[in-house]
Amino acid sequence: MKTAFQNVSRNFAGACRRFPISVALLAIAVFFAIICFHAPKLYSANFYFFAIYYPASAAVLALSLRLWSEEVSNRRLSLIVQGVVHAVWLGAALYFASQVPFYDNKPTTIALVACCVAILLSCWVLSYVRCSTDDQLWNFMWRTTISAVISWGVGLALYLALSILLGALKLLFGLDTSIAIFDVLVACEGLVAPFLLMQLIPAGSKKHDSGNHLSRFVMGVTKYMLIPVAALYLLTLYVYTLKIIIEWRLPDGGVSYLVTALMAVMLLLTFVLYPSRNDAGMKLGHWIVRWLPVMVLPMLVLMSIGIARRVIDYGITISRLYLVLFNVWCYVVCVVLFVIRSKRFGWIISSFALVFLISSIGPWSMSNITRHVISHQIDSTLAVHGVKKTPMDAAGFSKFINKLDSAQAENLCSQLDYLRLNYDSTAIAPYVDPRVQIYESDTWDTDTVAVPASTQDIDVSFPTYEPIAVPAGYRRVTYVDADVNADVVVKNGDILNFAIDNGGKMLHFTVSTGRLRQAKANKSQRIELKSSEGAMLYPYQFYFDPQGYNGSARFMVKGLLFLK
Image (tube, rainbow, N blue to C red; front, top):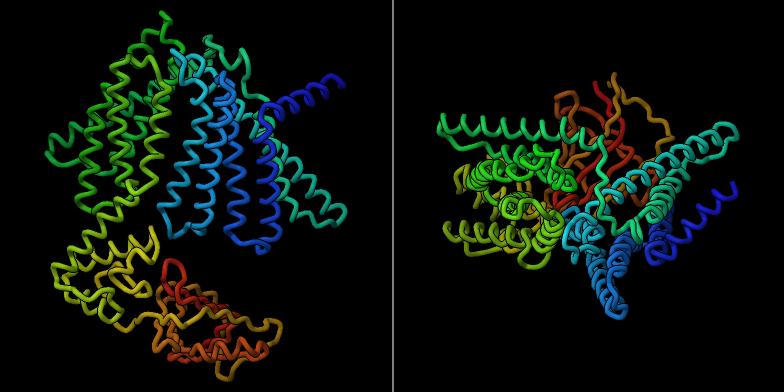
């Protein structure tokens, strides 16, 4: 028992000595995650994002740089490089934090994800860039991947065990332990699991092991599962290719998903079969790794045609541009694998991380290219139809839309809506007022007008404990919980017209913002609203946000609805 405890203590101390920066940063990230959960309004969302995201990501970056520095003999160079990289990442994290929230800023979200992917993948390949073969990289990847699965599995098991204990404390002693569940989860998966993983990361001779350690179980799974799956994918795609040739039509855009899955299986086979490339008893594996990239190439052509069809039919989007880039990357991977006879695979990981990162940051990013192309198309549409005064207000936009045919109107509104949803309201500011309602539809509600900037949020709650007498002449009552987006008509910046769906029958109500603000000032004052159909509404809560989600007005009402 004493020896076991000493081994655990020694391993933990060794991990702390090897990765001191990562250990400290993880502790900071977990601390602020718990603080954020218990006191979400203590600090701003920007601060909480930075205080959690930066230490967590920087911990992984520090681990990657530490693994790399173990292969560098020049300590001064190692320290300079690590310092510069950490400084750059600190600046990037501060920028990401300044962009919170991300729900209407897809370019920043994609850039953030690309940076995280690059940092994670660098933990694998950064230490082995100078190796003549990928044997050491293969063993390191295999061991760290298995260790990561085991570590987070242990963390999850510990969390479940402690959750049961907390539940028992609540049941047996009446202690309120519900709030501690999140703390336990963060501690187990944010501290215990990473610390366990850091102890299991190969070091010394194990880190530079070049032996073949592929188990019979893995080879069996590869032989009887992965290879047949790859064969089925290929057979399906080749039969589909024959079908479209016979019918002489373009492939469906959805074929990209199956080709992507085939590409993933091919790369997995390339990785798994790499240690057996010199094994004379694996002739089938050698043949597959050698010729599978060639057999995948025609399917990539099919994927290219499918992507081109979707772009022509539906226009350019961020996801379609990334799909084009991925398609090109797949061509390069297949060609290079065939040329080098699949003798190296580490470059595939590095190239994926670099391509994804470079295409996601800077003015050349896929997001910025998409925005530029769509903006240019909108400029062309407005110029063709002689629109000179921009940005258009609600009345001007509605008048212009009604001049277009349905296809042109739908296309223009789709482009404007895409810019606002994936970037922010300023993306459409050169064309229309950001407060204008844009509907991707063939019919347009000309009575809906822009919400004045002077209109502020309204959030009114009424006492729910006071009894409500049933109005005379009413026989039925139901509870209403309606959350309406972009369906509220605002007239003169003061009158709100909204409708509640009551079993397929719409009940129309009208209320002034002045009346709501007066009720908010006097919380004891309950209001009643009568619909044009005769229904009576006694609200418990009103909420109105003129900008709402992505610029669309939001109106929420909860209360009792009396019906005749």
